[in-house]
Length: 310
Image (tube, rainbow, N blue to C red; front, side):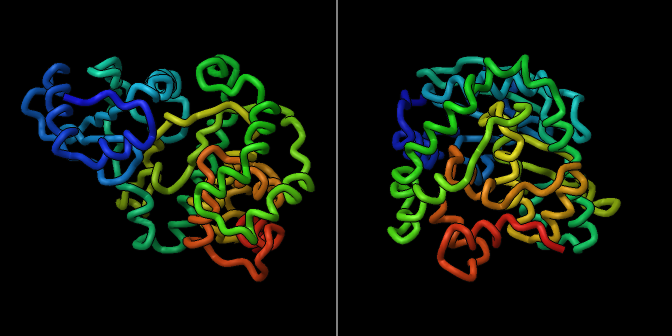
């Protein structure tokens, strides 16, 4: 039912073809003993994901992301009950057809934090942000040793060096304009990124879109999901998505996050450097969706997006 998919371009064609995907999801549900279950496609995400009934979620992975499928399944098992909020419970995982893999997991309680955010009063937003910081601190406090081989990279310094060498081309492909591209080499050369004292399990996309909340009882944070891109590395790396997609360049919220996490603010220039080196970095997109800096340079951008003022 599903074609073999070996590249991101091929994946994008398939992800947009619900007439192709839906029968495959129904067929797979039948194989998993869920014949007749109501399935509803989630509109967001780079991979096909379906709600199955009210309690389950089915996620599909093409062959070239087999490692990510295995990683997510293993991490869901390892993290169960170890964080202050719920993570999806693994029901089953394995191969489907044409190289595709799947993970069937429990559906988290509550609603998408990103969708709910505009309706949440500021005091409750602050409480949600503080709780999220406690969750990330708990994730970072776990022993990353047992999962390093599963998540990688085996050598953080080597990963940083490889990302640095590809940074300009990566941002060029994403559509970043020349005035910004020209600044990247000198900026990265000016920001030391020493080896972290301790590498931790990184979510890498700790953002509103991957958190859930319950509107009852003052908007309680209920869950964290999407561990497919998890890595082991410098804790500061996770603060890129925190500042860009959770606190969204709000210095007061970022300061609150640091306080609840229990760490002094990272140098904004370090987080700007990690933004340029992040696997999923797209500075062109960020510049269109986040507050503009007072000057068109990376130093000003670092302070605008990653400053943790009052």
